[in-house]
Image: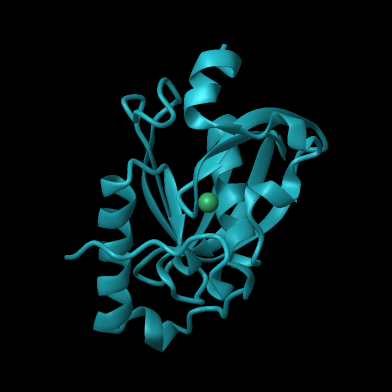
Length: 177
Ligand code: ZN
């Protein structure tokens, strides 16, 4: 396994959108290695999720893992490692909740983003089996953030008020509750 270079905002890959992964591709050693490398890269950067465009690949692959010990998002409910291929949000709650988000592709910034409180997502696992995920709270937030990446969107596009945008140090000083 190896660490991948993270695509930063401004690189065209972040805005380009993605193609679904075919069943043949998914079983290829290249895509399986890419998934392993995305997991390693996410963990190394203390991310709670990463999408393929964030490692310069325009494919519909996301990886999520939340640990309460994560230094970037401490005290969130744990989500075991999850790999989702071609994820589609099928249903969502009507209610939204504001929460702080950052992004490995938008370093050192955080903003207050409204997200649906609950989502149902269909996709495939890394073996190509159909899975349905029912997520709420922070987990639902992370899924929506990562699915946005597959559609060329970043959290900044979802900020209703740019005045909540803050650097991390200033977040710790003035915004953290
Ligand atoms: Zn992101």
